[in-house]
Image 1 (tube, rainbow, N blue to C red):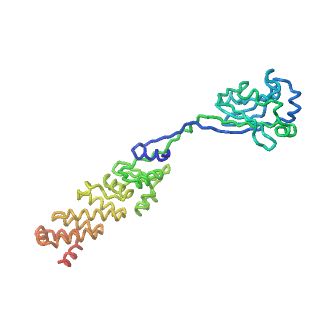
Image 2 (tube, rainbow, N blue to C red):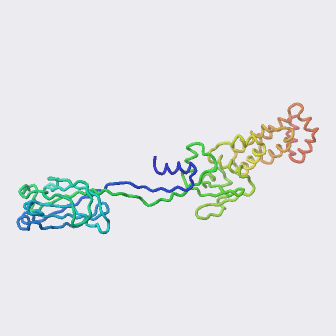
Image 3 (cartoon, one colour):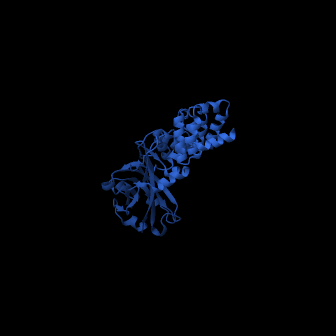
Length: 357
């Protein structure tokens, strides 16, 4: 699982502020070519234990150099080439852990006579690691190794370094105020940083502008007119219950109906319907209409018809007219002074009722 996926999972689990950093060990390899001009003559004239240094080169954030003794680094190794890898930047970069290999390049540029330096800790000159008996003068082939009297040495250095990236503060993707229920909804929530805050009933809800605008043309208009601070657009809705807004927000992200417990209460279903109509969430509005059809009774009929007329709920209106058309219901409704209520609240329903009967 990638770091991004892990952070996403942690945010989905409710952790509001998540930070991340990475540490580990890695190896960096670099190569340096040292050419000793006139080696054939130099090997005969230079004194034993005479050191010659290469230029410095950088590998793994450290400076390195080669200390070469063309005629050996001690009396015992006179007639040899001794060569050592040294860290040249110890004072500024500290000790380094590295390994390497030393080779002679033949006239075709191919490595030969290769010897290996096992992984060691380098602590700067005069200390180094290499080969005291790298190659014997008499073993060097004039045609193969000493082209034009020059000796060319290849040094490959592999530095092992411990690393830790900069501490990364991951912008907290606010926890959703509803159950995401599914990978798609989770992806919708985490794909982008929250950039909208909506205040409802004293609570602030995080959301994504792209979701709100895609689901509701009304939200799209309101967001275009709202104030923006620190790249976050802020909205305030004064005339809506918190639980109603949660139902709307959940629907826009998950396309799921309100909780069953909410729909079992006619008053809550009515509030959600009104808000769904306000924000042009037609599918959610229809869900609430169908739910309210199951709550129609004699005591709520007039109010339900009035609600249906105000919010253009054709399904709910038809259900109310059907209820009134049932045997005995119309008589009971008239006896309860229901006709007067219809005249006051929903006069158009009287016409529908007359047509049906």
